[in-house]
Image 1 (cartoon, rainbow, N blue to C red):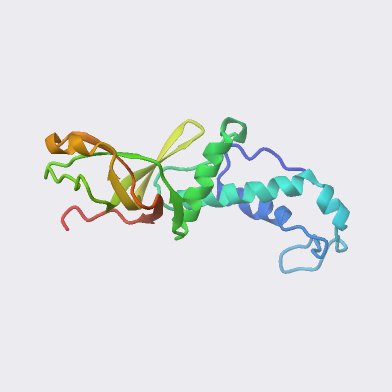
Image 2 (cartoon, rainbow, N blue to C red):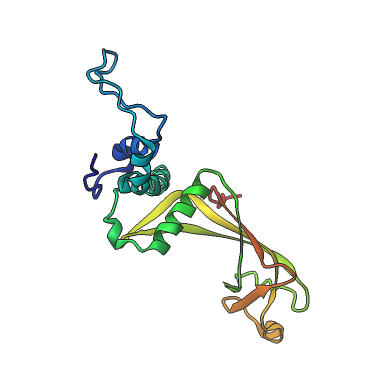
Length: 203
């Protein structure tokens, strides 16, 4: 079995075949048949050593997670999303796409953070200088897929910073709307990331 190039194809086109190979196990049998008709070949059951030794099986198991994430992205954008040349995508970008796929499928992800920069809004609300506070931030989701920018139309990324404080409390006294301030973790560096619908502008 060989795998041809996936570049330019949609995840929905190739995921079933890739998943089939990824699920190969010694107990799995493959048979060629006309749909709804009689088998055309005998059942082929790969040996455990064949499965372990096949680089294709390992490759498809890794690729499946990426394709599932890209398929989830397609469900939230009007742009047509196709599979890029994976040699042009860094491991870090692949990890970010797989993480985004988990979020789009409804998972909440706990992580840690070191610092965040925020801009004071027109209301001029200034965080307390000497206290810890929780911070909820939402932002649009824009994905860079091998140099192609893809914006998700109907969801936003929401990050809850469980405990934050100002990195420079003395600067808050003179802060004005439009100024940027830097926040660092308070007693906890934990944050929770989720994907939510956009806020209602009239709400």
